[in-house]
Length: 267
Image (cartoon, rainbow, N blue to C red; front, side, top):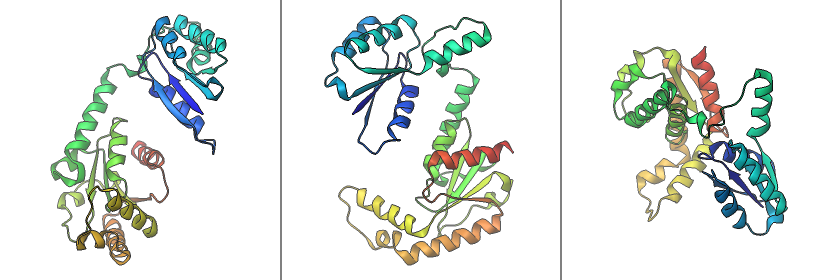
């Protein structure tokens, strides 16, 4: 089955809804994003390109009323199941507010102060990733500390997309810990820990995914059970010394971990 995420903007919202839908089924479901459907011609070209329509579903977040209705008509003609996500929500909000919607595609992506804050946070995360420069510690909203492969960088980028300046410090027994880490408010420091067996598997997978990979002694130690346990023990002692909040990321989605961090920041 294929779910087409159709939008008159970039299609991210439609794709997220489509993926959330697909995640509830064991069967294989492919999600394909179809952005910038803004005219009747765009609709016709899209619908005419579809084959095997009994295995197709369309999730639409099209705002433009005429285009949205035409898409529904064409899908009905070809017996394609279609769900419009935003239409009912906008109509209900209009009734409650007793106001007329603006019907502007992509309005949610407006370039306001919040948008520029996100860009600034992303640039911050890239600049200070993996302890490239410790001078950013005092400017960060949150500082993540953890071993290699505990999702520090992906978390920083996810938080940056929420406008949060996040910086990460990798922990290794051989590497010195920056003194600045002990000079900032510990409330904004988050330690990341993980089950040793999962960390070993993640590291093995990481090594195996590198093309033309030829194992060195250092690589073998990277995923060695004793080495991993020693690193976790070192990290645990360090986090206790700092007195920071610790989050166990074992089998935890980045979004879930980020939510815990954002709630902490609010407090």
